[in-house]
Amino acid sequence: MLFEDVGESMGVEWIETWDDMHIWEFFILGSLLIATIILGIEFKSMQRTRDSLEERLKAASGSFNRLLEAHYDAWNLTPSEREVTKLILKGCSNNEIAEIRSAATGTIKAQTHSIYTKSGLAGKNQLLGFLLEELTDGGSVAG
Image 1 (cartoon, rainbow, N blue to C red):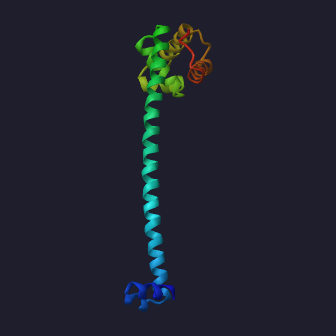
Image 2 (image 1 turned 90 degrees about the vertical axis):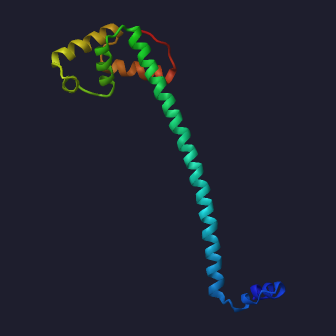
Image 3 (image 1 turned 45 degrees about the vertical axis):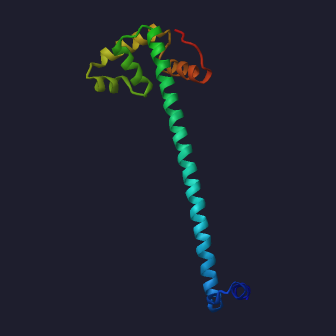
């Protein structure tokens, strides 16, 4: 066997006592160790990628909030109207907004009407479309 020849030339007699099963076990153990090292390296790489993506998400979220605030300022929205606008953007209905804000549905309807009038937009769909276009095109504050 190859291992016996190597063992004799190196003066390692214990290799002579190894049978084929021991050689396979040694090979498998070595392969597992190499695979563990490779997986560890890949895991570290994935962690770095995740951290990078989290940083990008934070930056994008901050940019989106600055964009919203710039539009809120341009449209002269009150603090209540700003909160209602955020809830509209989250997909809440007037009834849900009223429940969340502990307000009457009529009050929310009046606020949404005021938001759409101040922004020059016809409704929820135009508001969402306008802001989506601003995000994708990097448009300027308009109103």
